[in-house]
Length: 237
Ligand SMILES: [Zn+2]
Image 1 (cartoon, rainbow, N blue to C red):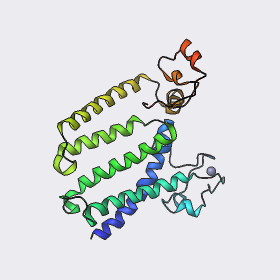
Image 2: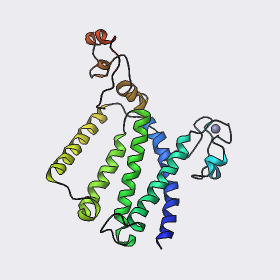
Image 3: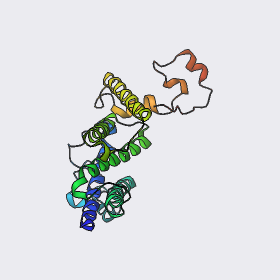
Image 4: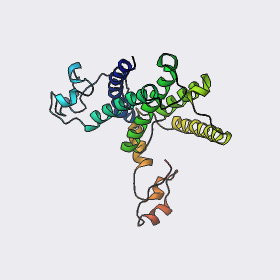
């Protein structure tokens, strides 16, 4: 029975990877992840279903758009493969290899598996978006936070490992920081206006004139005196 479930989660992982590609491409650009449907970023034409099969179509099309011949990024096939491996691997670790104790049969503990799979996918999307754009959309962080807190509150011993009071306090502090970041985000222009996240990344997240040019409000006299210094990345984002 576990083999059937494993094959099922290989398929689910591939489809989820295709969805993550949409999230990774559109969310930083302030676009809807629902509408319009899949289309080529170069020629804008809709992608037919047979050209949009996860893990297959990229190879069939040899990494190029069928209509205009524009190259399709390797990222699409890498994300689909990585999500498939993560989803099927998580199932195998829990229910085939038995690496997590106290899990029980899948039909009893599937909510825990689902929560952990969503958190893994959120982590992957965050990592790729952060690598490409130097920031993490707060929407993904919120979804992961809500799922983490809700699942831990529902069945704390089954869903999450036991933590010390110090770790719990650190978690609450992180939640407070997230709330503050969300408030600051609402004070900035929405993604659909003024170039969205990419503009913010260009302003605050990428190397500009000097390290002081990233301070808020932008510096003036001190910035001019510091332009001869080499740019050094700031650890906080
Ligand atoms: Zn095209």
